[in-house]
Length: 68
Image (cartoon, rainbow, N blue to C red; front, side):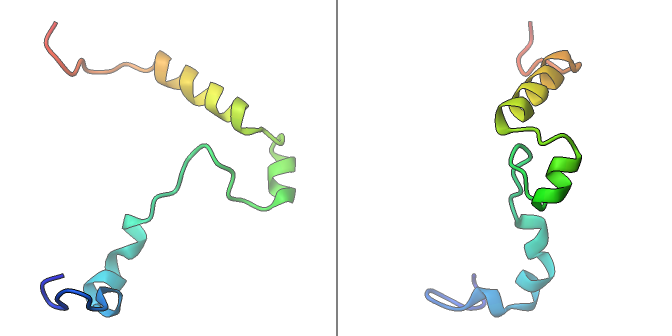
């Protein structure tokens, strides 16, 4: 941002080009593959995906965020 200033085209900068893939957000619950692969893997809808992720999170060990 400092190099291009207000209103500049930061997407043209080498640093942005080298790092933009790491900054992309890819939701894990939404299906991003094509229809055939989705069906082949069981055609799981968003509700089943959310249920699986919730159960996984509840069963995982975790560090308390605050002291008990």
